[in-house]
Structure formats: C-alpha cells, structure tokens
Length: 369
Image (tube, rainbow, N blue to C red; front, top):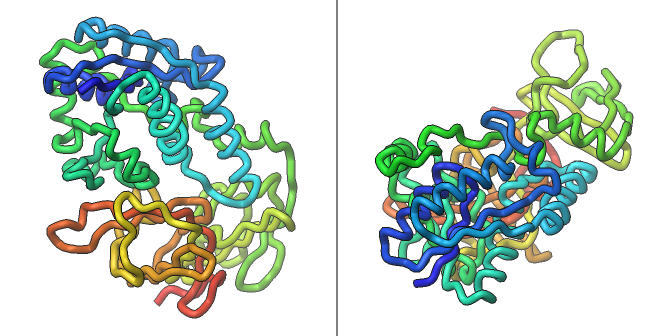
C-alpha cells in the first residue's frame, strides 16, 4: 500500500512512520508547515510545527530511507483552525483546536491531497486503534486520542492508519531509542500549538481587544466584578475569575453571554448539569438507531459517563447523563462510545455541545445532589 506518513517531528509520528515501513508499505514522509513564522512556534514542550520540528522529521525520514516533503498549509490552518478558535471564543464557546485540526487539516486537506497524488492512506502517530474499520481507544488510556478523532467520517477512517494504538507511550519511546532516533526522548507538545507561551487569554485579547462586562453572582444576581472580555473564561473555570465574594466559597463559571458580555459565576452546588444538547452528529460508522444507551466523554481529558441519547427535532442530539457533570462547555465535543463491556472502547461518533440543562429543560444549571 502506498501511504503518506504525517511527520510532526515528534517521537510518535517518527515511530508510526517506521512501523509503516516495517509493514512493507511504500512510505513517503510529509511535514506540515502550519505557521507563516515557524521559528516562533516551539519553546521547550510547548507548541509544535517549528523549523526545529521539520528538521527532526527530516532526520527520521533520512534514517528510514523514505522520501520527505514539507507541505505549506499555513493559510488553510489559519482559516480553519486559528480563526475558528478566535470566533468560537468571541461567541462565548470553548473550542477544541486539536479536534478541528484533525477534521479540517490532517484528514481533509492532507488526505484530499494525498489521494490526488495517488496515495492510499495517511499514517499518523495518534494514540488510537482501528479494528475492522472501527475507531477505538488506545490501549494506553493516559495517551488515548480517540476523543479528538471522533469527528472523522467512515470514509476518512478507511484511509487512516494508526500504528501506535496497540502500545503504550513508554513502548513508543523504547522503539525510537532502539532505532537510534534522536527524538526518542523529545518532550511531547502541550497546550495549543499556535499559542506557544500558553497564554490563551492574552492571545485572544490581542485578537479581540477589550470587551468589558459584568461578572454576576448566580445566587443573588448581584454584579461582583468586571472583566475585560468573555473570551477570557470558560464554563467550569474556577481560577482567575478576578472577583472576591463575601462568603469566600469557591466560585465557578456557570455561563457566558457574549451579547451582554456577562459572565455568570456560582458555587459548586450550582455547577452541575444533567442534560447536554448538541448540534448535528458525525458518526464514525453506521448511524445507531436512536434512542441508544452509550457513554459520553465531554472534554478531551474527561471521564466517560453513562448516558441515553435521543434525537432532537432540529437534527441534533439530546444526551441525558446518568451522573451530573461540571464544566460542560458549549463548543466542546460530546464523543459517544459504545457501552458494551467488551466493546466500550469503540467510538460511535460526536457532536458539538450547544447547551446544557436539567431533564425537561434546555439551558439551566441546577444544584448537585
């Protein structure tokens, strides 16, 4: 099989490319240039896609004896990932740029170009498994990336290869060291690649400017502070609220209203939600017959929660949670997994979260039991 190996310059993609070669595939390596100023995109373990990373990827390709190219997708990345990220925060939502990058860049722009060039599949270093065409969690639960791949369609998954899903991250580094790859001990990338200093609020402030508004206490309706922009907050946030309420109990962000620029905060007993309402879903295989019982993961590093999924009249989903959850933010992805004990690692699909509430309601937070 003729495959394109997406090589970020990290240890995961290096080993994935090596395993593709070992499997007998005709492999070509490609590094994605995603920024017009790649010199600024790495500082230690932060960021990715820098010139340093391109050099690391090229060295691995040379050691494997495979062709290697750099594809400039900076304009596409800016439009589909960075601008989307800014627009989502401006609208009071909390996006996941890694999910958007997988959807729009790695498995749309790259896959489309790869197919046009005659490649059969794209190989990546994602920690997830494909079994009989079904997307499943990695055996390394701590590194599992199936959540950010849940947006992929059956057609995209049919042209994807994930060689690392059956091994732990320690084993990946061990293989890299055995092969003498210089990236064997390279730190993993963290945070958001296009915000290398990790200051998301500062990045958004530079893009969106000052948009001051009130911080309101949900229990009393009183204004307890001011903020410079709703984009500096996400539902469930506890730290950095910039307010002090008389009883000194911890406060959490309960809601964000970008039109009135209001951030609503409240105590832990007001922070739970029981129902999640989403937009139209993307299924990784055949769409299940609704209603269906499943498990749902509501953020990238969240724990799965048993739920019942029904259809909404507008084409979205209504997900009733078995256990109340905090920090469920609009704009994040609700990824559904099969609940069967033997197959509970299988991804059914995902949908973007629109609103949350109680059973029988649509947009209300309610007390935890």
